[in-house]
Amino acid sequence: MLTIRDLTKTYANGVRALDGICLDIPRGMFGLLGPNGAGKSSLMRTLATLQEADGGSAVLETDGRRIDVLREKDAVRRLLGYLPQDFGVYPKVSALDLLDHFAVLKGLGERKQRREVVEGLLHQVNLWNVRKQKLGGFSGGMRQRFGIAQALLGDPRLVIVDEPTAGLDPEERNRFLNLLAEIGENVAVILSTHIVEDVTDLCPTMAIVDKGKVLLSGEPNAAIAALTGQVWRRQVPKSELDSYETRFTVLSTRLVGGQPVIHVFSADAPEEGFEPVAPDLEDVYFQRLRKHSRVAA
Ligand SMILES: Nc1ncnc2c1ncn2[C@@H]1O[C@H](COP(=O)(O)OP(=O)(O)OP(=O)(O)O)[C@@H](O)[C@H]1O
Image 1 (spheres, rainbow, N blue to C red):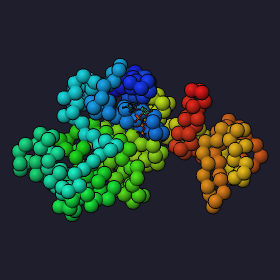
Image 2 (image 1 turned 45 degrees about the horizontal axis):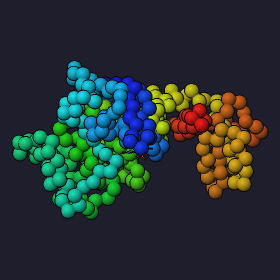
Image 3 (image 1 turned 60 degrees about the horizontal axis):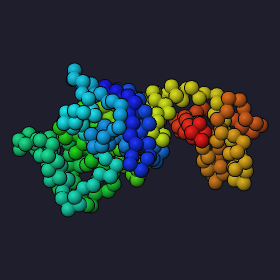
């Protein structure tokens, strides 16, 4: 549905934020996973027509039309819902009034139809009971759900959400992800995040990006299966962590009961004391990042 080829962007300070990005993004939830500074927001802003790319192409195919995302900006904007990373609200306005205001800006001019849409969305994102409260008093999760409501105005075919779960508590995060999953049944949703579980829980297709490049794209399950037999686990003394990190490809370190437990990537058993472990998406993520940073260095 969205085909991105060789997308590049270098900022005036010389940072190459997009370095030949190629992606095929189908309908449903697509997870764009990468650490801070990977280039996720640069890609999201480019697709949302808010900044120019230096080169490459992005084509959106929907309802039998082919739209050049980099050139046909008005057409893209009509089909796009966008929740930016730094979504700000007017704190003294109620959710109902601000959503109605956004609906006017989105071109929903006819009052009765606009009311139906606005009220429907407030129900959908579960803010109906608080619709008359000022947005300044909303929790982070409520604000993000309001952000989704405004992104859904005008029945978009492509929805882009940039790092939406950062700072949400587990319950709010779950609620928000469930809402996204429902939306993803009908349209393409690109979820940019540095939180691996967001992708594990939600996305049938995904990509890992770092330093402006795509390190992996496809189905999470296939990427996890490809690591089978190559991830090993061991509890290690804190004082020996550095030594393990120099001798092995350590993917992650977690504290279990106060003791570090490491995951190591290795084709064979690294040494006595390691046990094989079923890989998960976090192992895939860190294996790709480690490999890429070694290659880049
Ligand atoms: N307007 C800009 N001018 C110069 N450099 C920029 C600009 N915007 C982003 N960058 C740089 O480009 C790189 C990619 O940034 P980007 O915000 O796209 O990454 P990100 O994956 O979204 O990370 P984050 O989650 O931290 O926003 C970073 O090195 C960042 O410092």
